[in-house]
Amino acid sequence: MMHERWVSGVVLLACIAGFIGVVLVGPTDEMAALRRVLGIGEDRLADPADVEPGGTYAFLQYQPGDEDDPVTWSPCRPIEFEINPDGAPQDDDGAVELVRDAVSDVASIAGLRFDYLGTTDRRPRWEDRFLPAGRREPVLIAWADAGEVPLLSGDVAGVGGAVAVRRGSVRGLHYVTGQVTLDSDAFDEIDLRVNGDAEQRAIILHELGHLLGLDHVDSEEELMYPDNLGRLEFGTGDLNGLVRLGQGEC
Image: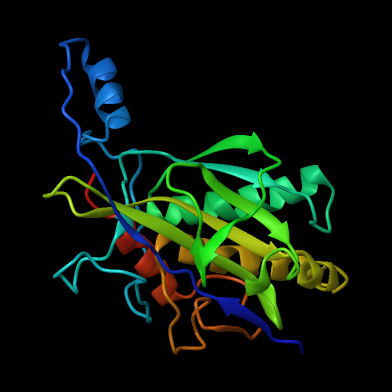
């Protein structure tokens, strides 16, 4: 069996100025929506799944000075994402369906809401090794080859990562954007296999795990193991890690 190599994402710390706004009194629902837009909402958009405890998981980054508190996406703000299906072995509709199915699974586990904005012609950009470019763009999920994204060289089937920024001195870091880039050559080869769709989906799940903040683990029982040994679904530890990442502060 060919072993595709997963690649973890890493994050960039960036500081942005806080803001002061005037909020007018209005209906409760409208106020809650406005608070979420401003990033000050207290209302979760969804709840993490109930999963069996156990397994092994690790996080890419922790809040400064607190090794027990991982950096997370805000559970009170939707994660907007776009898909560029160019280079996928499926037609555009098939590629979008494959990605959206995987995103839906990850979202339901973590209790985070993903909002699909549609297809795009944006191309992957990485500032440094495993570090996606951009600060405020929607998450981009796309296919590329090693000529365009050198991180895909060798037996790497995909890369994923997120960018974290500080929103005020007391609120710590939140992930605000990221990318998942899938190797078009590897996906073409996998597409010819009997179980090709499931294997491609597993790669996407793995990279989405990095996008949300999961790191690699040493256990072969988890999908976040560094090498793809044929596992098709998240393991118990992966599930618990995703649930923990969905329990961040707003």
